[in-house]
Length: 329
Image 1 (cartoon, rainbow, N blue to C red):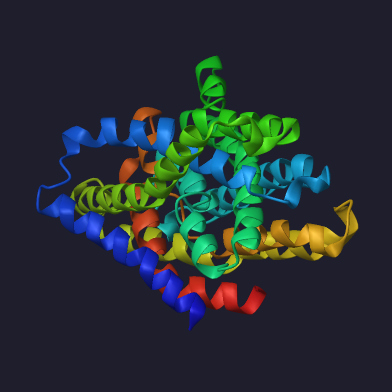
Image 2 (spheres, rainbow, N blue to C red; image 1 turned 180 degrees about the vertical axis):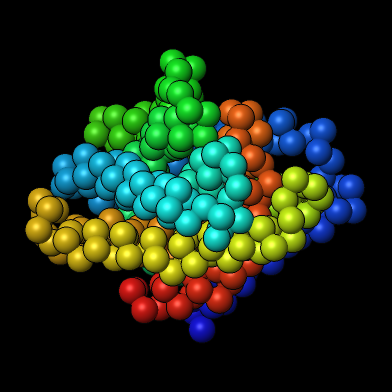
């Protein structure tokens, strides 16, 4: 019930974002500005605030291993989704190479940021434990983000350019590096009190704003997935069902296997490895990411395919997410 309550709380805010979009309160014209606010200011503030409270980086393994696992698990998911897309294309409603490439990223990449963050906060009432899990989550996401902007964009577009590599050096990734340097140099003792208070205020805004924006983007994705005339109804349902089985049923096993191998690859004690194990469990339970819809739109993919996978897995994860976290946690 604790996991279910936390999941319902997250999806309630997401549903509110969708409702506000439908009512015209969250206007699409403001998306670029609001997302820039989230990515450039609020999420970096949350990252710095939580890392400075963390005790997880007493071991170097929590600095270098999480990004490697973030990249590795994302790459494995994309690879397995690619094999399914090309082996079972017509059965999954994927009639064109463009649709198969998009399905590869949409089903292969999990939601690694905006959903795990509020769930980690809700499931860990102890402040220190919560800070440890969130800080390791942010470091892990550096590797996952790099996989998105390298492998993910290359899969959808068919090529990898310097501009996509530059996008991997984004504000959240830079905030992780800056926070770790600041932590090693003395942490909060180096920050004036008024700046520290401002940092906490901005950090508190990050998750609610991000969840509202996810709801608005999911509303748009649902509309786009329904209105695209190039796909039959059968193909649309096959894509949604196939993506859900892959993302919510099979690909979590990649994270399960990684978590099981953690005692052999983590240099440190079991207590020091626990935050990373928790992050792997959270990532295992996640639905598909929403951002592949945007990637497909700008890099020659099929946005309707990405939208169907994102919406279907997000809806079904309301059931599967608590079950995975309960079973693995």
